Image 1: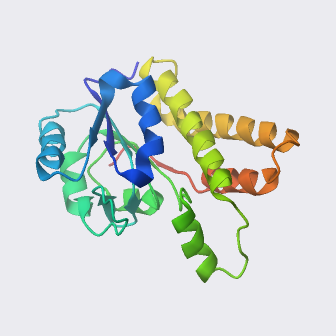
Image 2 (image 1 turned 120 degrees about the horizontal axis):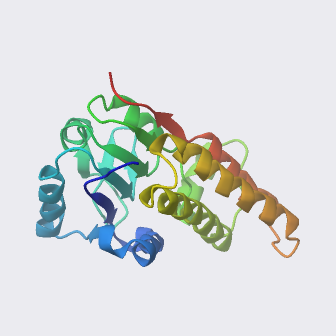
Length: 220
């Protein structure tokens, strides 16, 4: 049994993260979103600050190797919702899943939380694709529809795995394998479906998503 006292799915919502509202459709009583209004941001921080151990916290939104971002309708993402210091404070003794870019590096800097899962560079928008292609020698040939499909597939994999975790069908340490299972199933389905024109590139994004996932166990 995971025996979580509380389960919080935190979603900093703006135009670029609207697709993550799918979490609300499946976990409405656990779902908390906030926009750019300062009072809304502070409400979520107060909720986090009032938590005792042991809870499950899932963050779905933009991030980097040094923090989790507040919403930003301009798409600049300069202001942190939580940096390393505040994350160590709010996440102390909690199980956390950070569905955000480069959270695989961010969680390595968190030494106060319990178990944690992070991810690599998630290419969730055309803007992020353009940034990648401007820097990379090997370009990714993807349309906006391809990226939307990629987003749908990995979000589905996380949601299905979370349902098992929340319903005590699996334990937290089994989450990575469970996410891998659903990602692999999606990859197989995509590659078999010849109606998906750019199926190899979409499958490659899912391969990268799966392979860049990082799980770190209980702190010492």
